[in-house]
Image 1 (cartoon, one colour):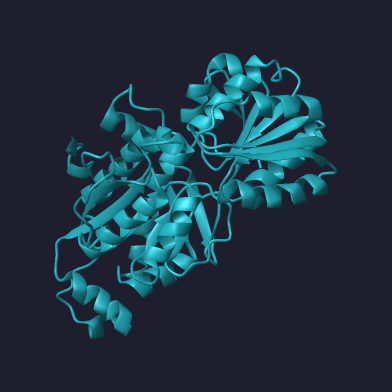
Image 2 (tube, rainbow, N blue to C red):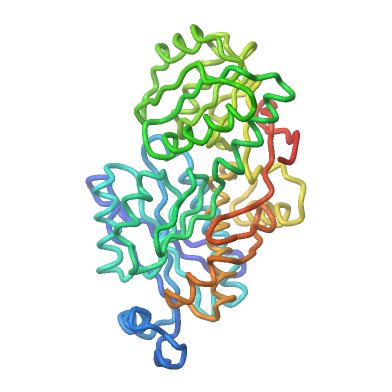
Length: 406
């Protein structure tokens, strides 16, 4: 079945989500980057860019193919990610689009078997002529999709990730361990005297790579790792993991579990009586996950992130005001992962305006070093790496309380 959603905020925004009978998305419409009535010579384009522009022909729409997750453990972020992307589309279209092109948003599910997600992306590029992919999904999907996008179309990856993404055409703008985990670990060591650490994460590339970095940061802070394990994505029975943690007697547990896996683990952690004596530092946690954990299960739970919806700033006030005006006071709570989809389109708008072009190579060149602003305020991209203010927060019931700028 196919859902077409129209939201009115002074401008119509269409988001098309297609789900066939077997449960995986079919092929929605596409996206477009520039008025191709001009010749390649007018823009000093390479043969690759000239082919890119010729293939799509002259169109009036800038079609965005957004790969979001609606199923499995990361599916908890699907609704707020969709809302945040649609808000960005509405605002950009109200300003006249990007380089005069109105944005049209198409949403694809990036959940389920990765080979099926790859097939959707291949078909979206080949048959829907999607000109840009934006993604808010686990890193395992990104690693697979970057082989599809290659040097063919730009790919903006928005959420927190393990760092080190240098694939041509891939623009990663999320938090990385150096800026997110390192100062938080040092703070917990200095202020909370955390010396013994246990690491637990989902069994895929983001926790694998992040833990490698985290071990260095713990050693820097004078601590030691007393245990580590990786849990299959979708695991909800944490009895054995908690028994090992209890036996290791850590001062702090670093949690790199994803989505609902983090929810079930943190609930079980508190119910086992560990929350009163053991600190927790979560890597991919936001207000959506906190709501699922529940107010009674968040004692001694800390999180470091470049965005919290309690941030007091003009940029965040404007973002949240627009979010509530568009979706109402009872919309899914927006957090770091969902808001990153808003960031992705604001980033695209900024670098396209800086490049004066939406052709492949000029866009990527402009994206290497730039400054843009969205919900979390100014973000600097330096040599392809995102740098932003980072915040440490402590869970306070169903809300986060900011305690330090890292």
